[in-house]
Length: 201
Ligand SMILES: C[C@@]1(CC(=O)O)c2cc3[nH]c(cc4nc(cc5[nH]c(cc(n2)[C@H]1CCC(=O)O)[C@@](C)(CC(=O)O)[C@@H]5CCC(=O)O)C(CC(=O)O)=C4CCC(=O)O)c(CCC(=O)O)c3CC(=O)O
Ligand SMILES: NC(=O)C1=CN([C@@H]2O[C@H](COP(=O)(O)OP(=O)(O)OC[C@H]3O[C@@H](n4cnc5c(N)ncnc54)[C@H](O)[C@@H]3O)[C@@H](O)[C@H]2O)C=CC1
Image (cartoon, rainbow, N blue to C red; front, side):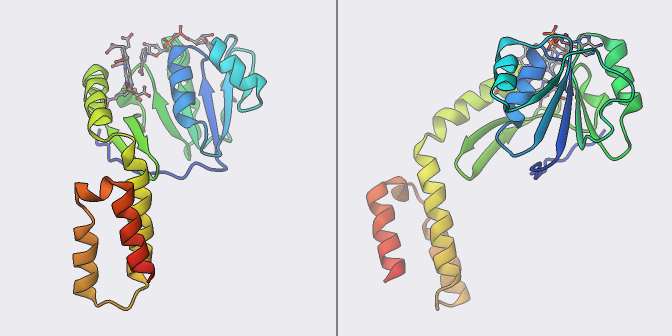
């Protein structure tokens, strides 16, 4: 097994989640909000999944998995508490689909990292299945280190980069300007505004 991190556009794709328990709930929480069509197959679901279903944010087939399911899916999450069912999901997955096996990471094509969001910035941590607990504690440290000011800071860097790219300054000067902005000084909203005003002038 050899896993590489990728940012994937899942908008408009179908994601089938087999199982509706705690793990399915965690995966669905990770996957909602990206414009994918999330479909659950499970006789039971957690309260939180039920509420997403009631709000129309996910669809739900209230029944056990059938080997003909998930043929349209681009991503399949096998997350039942029945090992035989999870392996049947793997055996019957269409060749084009990526599979996440909750009970045995290395039997699947994809592993979910732990993730923090700061606006456009995503920080993901994976131990390759070695220790979700370590992932969780590292994320807590990162959450503290990169506080909520980083959302505005990342937006600011994005805005500056666009302005600098389209400005008349030379290649080396562009690089220097972009590098200078990578300082804690610019976490401050006032300093950000000064730079933006200057770049727009
Ligand atoms: C392989 C992987 C699944 C995959 O393929 O995606 C996987 C597998 C397993 N997790 C287990 C248990 C727990 N997982 C968590 C939490 C998280 N688990 C996540 C990811 C992954 N978990 C993938 C690998 C990630 C990597 O290591 O890089 C995180 C990062 C993201 C997410 O789930 O969305 C999220 C924390 C992020 C956050 O805090 O935000 C907690 C709670 C906690 O720690 O707080 C517990 C209970 C405590 C414990 O047991 O550690 C068990 C044992 C099951 C059993 O035996 O009952 C298995 C199965 C096995 O290892 O075989
Ligand atoms: N990847 C991870 O982070 C973790 C993985 N696990 C593993 O993930 C699996 C699921 O764990 P939990 O969500 O805690 O279990 P759970 O018991 O909370 O949920 C299991 C779900 O599967 C459904 N289900 C059972 N048979 C089914 C079938 N034939 N078709 C469709 N749905 C069916 C049940 O209705 C239930 O909704 C377990 O195998 C466990 O070992 C457990 C903890 C963490």
